[in-house]
Image 1 (tube, one colour):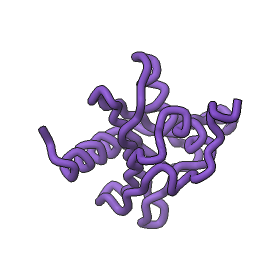
Image 2 (spheres, rainbow, N blue to C red):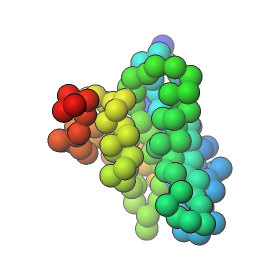
Image 3 (cartoon, rainbow, N blue to C red):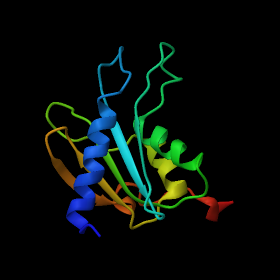
Image 4 (cartoon, helix red, strand yellow):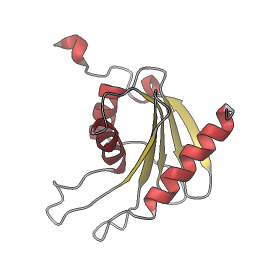
Length: 136
């Protein structure tokens, strides 16, 4: 069994690999994401832009939707790799809301650039007052 640090590194590597496949001809902003589920499976995704912009889908949502298509899940960790002027980038608001559906307050969110892991957050630190099924 891998230790916690090597699990984060493995997930970060998968997100880096996914970033290489990003389709971002308009923004040139390449993002990769990887999620680890409670079943130990890893799913990766990249951002896919569209000329209409509104149809663009972020890497985090691609990875989560791939996982959902395989069956019920809970997300243990999310790694996101992007590079904005040399800095890691947090998920956008829409991705945070989708993540809220499958993450819990303690889900680790690993942010990195292609060169290194920069920060690790708990999901609740990024979206402390998430809208959830508890409100329905």
